Image (cartoon, rainbow, N blue to C red; front, side, top):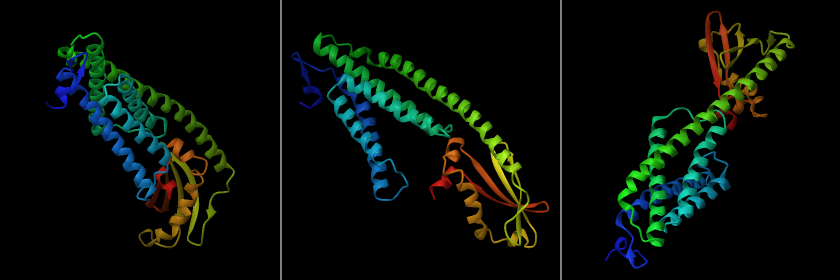
Length: 275
């Protein structure tokens, strides 16, 4: 007699559909645990720039506990696994720039949520079968679909709500940032000589991109040693890294070198704050 047929409660074996129903949820919990173990290990070994080692390790332990609990038909663990996944995914939206639309993420999330819903229904049916002796396993797919629709609506509504709230907050921050930059510009006696070959001539915005323009006098742009000017350009962007302005606004800055109608650009994003 195999393990699946040897699970007894009140003298009756747990229905096969209930036994199998918990497996998808256990599987995704194990996958989540492995992912966080990998992220934690990569950070500790210096293979990545991830600094949330304690946070990632905590999530790895929690996912392992959820997997074990669901395997033992714990209803609390089944529900908590779904809540933990909500927190895990929605937390990304709290930090600018949030998550851009991604078909792979959408497909993965859709499957993951279905697996969690299957686990919740299986654990509840196991409890009902154990305590009351009623076998509702023939309805497991129908009830899973009903719960899944509710969870899917709640999840994506929450994502959309957080995106809209973040967009509103960022617009307010952008207005304040724009005014601050323009005020600073009005106090600077442009152009400013950088060296014998270049001068900083203008600071302006193109959509949500800050552009710092320089004029090159002598050297042809094609021959301009951009590596030498990178340190100067990085220093201009770094001032926005120190107070988290770059990350909170998802600020892109272009340091432009112009000569007539020709230009050469050095671009910076919040990722450059890490270096």
